[in-house]
Image (tube, rainbow, N blue to C red; front, side):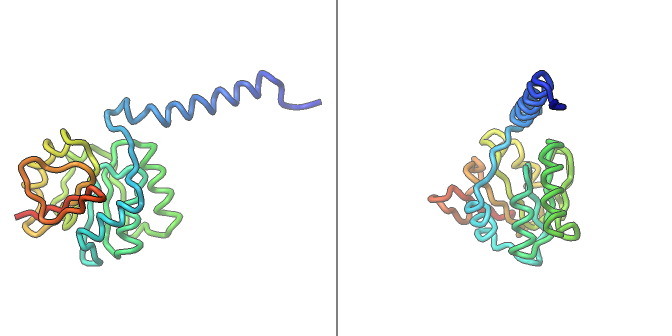
Length: 176
């Protein structure tokens, strides 16, 4: 006699489907859809900004932590991710802990519009056109001259990038 009955199997399947739907739909509920940056572009962003062990990198909307993890592992930077989605934060923290990067990488839960990034020397972001235009003033006010900003896919309308990689849609800006 089987412990699992057909109704309990159906219930388990329905719970899995519900969990998957929450995983997919949650970013839309909080207004921040999650579209992961491909690893090739992550590396390209970090190389374009010439990230090094002397940098403090902030990733705005850090998702699963791929940028902050690579910045620490491969480039030696201190890294901070700012993410609003608690599910992505849990995933990031799991990945950080699994790699033993707790001393060099952290994730802050919150809206990056309301969190200080004044100690950043490099900022990375993959946001939409509208968010880039809204965050530009904060970046200009918070960051010190010489800080670098790398945007994937979306430009800052009133800023001129100091370097671009058109093939990979990467734009590097320097705070004046």
